[in-house]
Every structure is written in structure tokens, then in C-alpha cells.
Image (cartoon, rainbow, N blue to C red; front, side, top):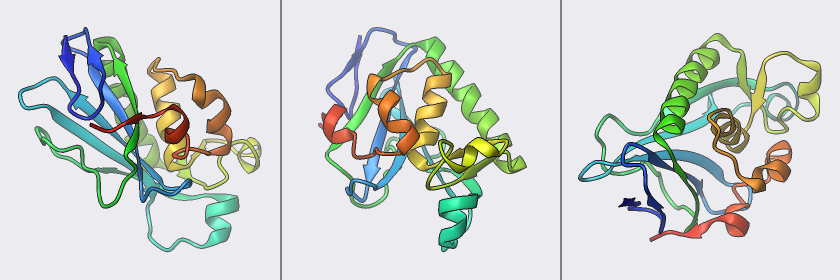
Length: 181
């Protein structure tokens, strides 16, 4: 059994990992970044941020049509910090995952990087439920992207059923999250 350096969780799978969703800038709409914590001494991290590819995108694109996205690797191999930038909420959504879920999540993220580069995954503030029903491809916010890839890897949270379509979290960390160590 090994313990997370970020949350109060323990993992019985030595080859598994922890996934942490962090609300950066601490507001209810914030920015969600994902950090995968690996069992090494010291622990290492893969920090990821799904966001618009270009700073300063227009509101019509962000709200209605969607804009090109990018997936930023916030960490490099073996980094001992999760890649959190700036102010963040003290409540973090943390999930204990098995070796299979970890492997599946890594494969899904690698596929997503290719899909983002091909333009079949885009960033949209409103996301899939409204305008996206009439378009092909995937439309996500930073939060709905993280939730979607976690669900595809078999990592499920009851809080996501309600929140993903409306991209209501990172605020859900206050409802379902745990205090950071």
C-alpha cells in the first residue's frame, strides 16, 4: 500500500496511480488541470492542461462554435511536482486508480493528443450538450475533457453525471473534493 503526497488516499495497487483534478485560480469556473501521481520515490507526476490553443480567442468561438484546442504537458518525465501553476483551491478531486486504469488513461491521453492535433477535439465553453449536438467531433472545456478521458479509462465519479454536461466543476471540488495535504 502506498499513500498520495497530495491527498489523504492510499492505493493498494503498487503499479496503480492517483489522479488529481485541480481547480486553478480558485473560482467556481476556474481552470481544471489533471495530475497523475505515480508510485516512485519520490513520487513523480504527469501534469496536463486542456485549453484553447490560442490566447485571447473571441467569445463567439469560445461560447458557440468552439476553437482549436491544445493539450499542454505541464511536467516532464520524472518531475516531482504536479505542474500546478499559480493559485489553486485547497480542495482537490483525487481518485485512486489501478494499474489497468492507469495504462488505459495513458493510452487515451496519447490518442487525445493526436485527435486534438487533427482538430477532431476542440475547446468550447458551452461544450457538447447544446451546440455540439449538431456537430461531429468532441467539444470540451478543461473540466469536461478531464472527466471524459477519465470515464473512458473506467474511472467514474457520481459527481460527474450531473456536472459534466454543464461544465460546472472545478466548483465540484467543494462538494466532492478532499482537502489537500
